[in-house]
Length: 470
Image (cartoon, rainbow, N blue to C red; front, side):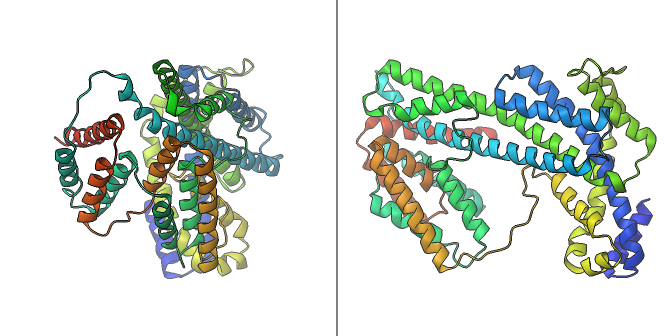
């Protein structure tokens, strides 16, 4: 088998005997994708069931997604209606996949909002303590600068600079902030617009400016928590109010972590069902192997439907499949390495032998089975971020943030600045400039509690790294 695959890949790479090699290749990769999607579906479906049972998830939004997944399992593997309803199944799977992506955008929004208010609350904490350790700011600043520039890897240096900016007290004029924002957007001029869009999305979420579809409709508990945090008066917090709000942040973060972990599994399950349905008309998986995978899927589904019986536990079936995933992954990854070559150079031949529909399925499956669970399946037309796009983006972001600053308190506005500054590309040219920024931020902060909180948080980051690398 390996020898045959090597021969096919060699012919495709060399552009030889393609009328024969391409159909043979598509058959092999379809078989491989179909089998690995079926095996991983069973494994991920079991992990999803296990996670839902462990956390006793009752969030209505998540339950609805789970119900849809069970519906697909029943339709395909119990009622055996896949082939007769294949087009409708593909359409509905694509819709559910997009729904999960929309829900994850909501969860990202709430994550950033809670982090924003956690930043504020962290800097209030020491105000309620009578005695706390006061570190020498000059000595600390020197230690922090030495730590940041101790790394030989420039990427790590930049990451720690950004993390430092995100924790330091912000004592910057709005004019300077908008200048840095504009400069950071200008970096994307004449580059792919999708990169600029990703950067702007990151800025908007971190600043609490992004409000995706479904806000207020899904995850009601998180919506109410976020509303409570937004409406609080942070300049006049009593200790009791502080404790209440920090509890809200921690509870919200716990819910998000739980739901995100489940949604990752949900998307992996949906991706595998999708890939299986796409390749089903073209694949021919060995019967004995297929029966094992189906037994695993149905043994999990039996927990949700009394009409389905299973003679084996999922755990026993998983033991019998040990090592199979590694074998199948190695095979399909070896084969799919030439997909890009086919897509870029050989689609005319693919069309001439009437194989486009098969290869379109393969191109989609390569995304569905990748490590990027939420990858876009449809490719967007490439656009360049020209001068007009850059200027329009600058104006949009400055306008949105200006409005945010007008309606926000000083503490909230500083938190927004810190969050967005930490997402920008490093705007210092020398290590001296970094040092000056750190020392100026600490010196210009007259609130001792805020200053010492920042110092303690950054000191903790340094100590965590040093302890981890002992």
